[in-house]
Length: 141
View (cartoon, one colour):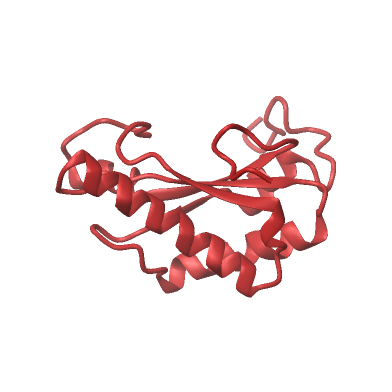
């Protein structure tokens, strides 16, 4: 059956991690070499911020990634700037900054590893991950 519910996504509870991933989405994409939020990215950020404000029990790790020309250090810095841009957008929309932290991974965690520009663009992203507790990359509280 073509429109059958996907396995594992039958009884998704509102406010769950699965709800966020499936109904809101956790990726935000960026232009090459940029940490500026595009109009398209802003749509995703707005949906994510609204969900986060309704579901305050989650902590939020904002992970930046890059696959851009330049050194490993430059990509790490760019990925951190991308994550910070999303963090700042969330704060501007009323998400509590004490729930969130950023981590830039540079080119360490590619979605895909290929030379094609379309393929590489998938690595120019921020991933918004829900957490139940702070990890070692979170600032000391």
